[in-house]
Image 1 (cartoon, chains in turn brown, orange):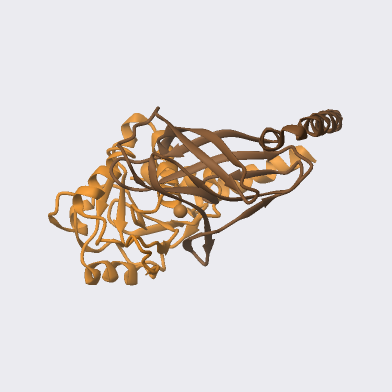
Image 2 (tube, chains in turn blue, purple):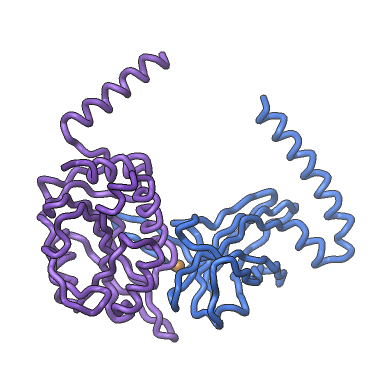
Length: 155
Length: 192
Ligand SMILES: [Cu+2]
């Protein structure tokens, strides 16, 4: 019951959001960016030059699908989208190029699954620092997100 | 119904404890005892015998792995920190790097220190690593180098557990629930 009520509320909010989005479409790019909401952005990092992993949740509250095609950060020389998987007792990791996020869809970059792989830090980083990252989409949209630097032991 | 289920579960748990089977995968009869000749975090040659006397968890990975390896080690660290103060110091985790080209003793030391004092990094030349991976029937494979010379390594996702005498006990797979892993680690440390 509570779940149903909650769902109705979400639907209503979405409808309102969609309406707002329409109204804002006059100011193109901005309206698009407002339909994407990133939460819980963390950058798991170890000392030295080992690469870091970026985790976050992304909700597309818009009416249109978007396609995430990558990420970049002034704090790292390169950032790739990776996915970890396990087959027959072996841990694999490989890069992927894009991810579609449908209307009202939520996706998650989470430990042992999809992650951003941050390679070659430009300057030393410490737990508690903040790192600016830009998520890039196929429609040229750029979404700035602040990641908190954390230890993998806190995840 | 609920009560019956609970009673059954309790019975199962009790039976599980009395006949000494592990909640994760029991490998006591199929895996050989702890044995290796590797290089430690200080660059010194070490033998498995030097690590006997403490219950030991062994994981094969590499430090250039940002996701699976640190998360696996961090979760082992969580399980260890849930143990009683007295028993916590008794367990050790050996992180055996299958990527010695990048994982020098210095890199390994800095890496394992981030997880806690129980974590020890080991590696060695290819022959020494292969002797250990063959012994425990795990594989590893290097991916292609990119233009920066970076490469990924496919490696075993299992954690092997040995008792104080170095006898193989259980094996933790990715699919095992955290509760089972924690219960088995607790029991491994508790057994005399
Ligand atoms: Cu990765």
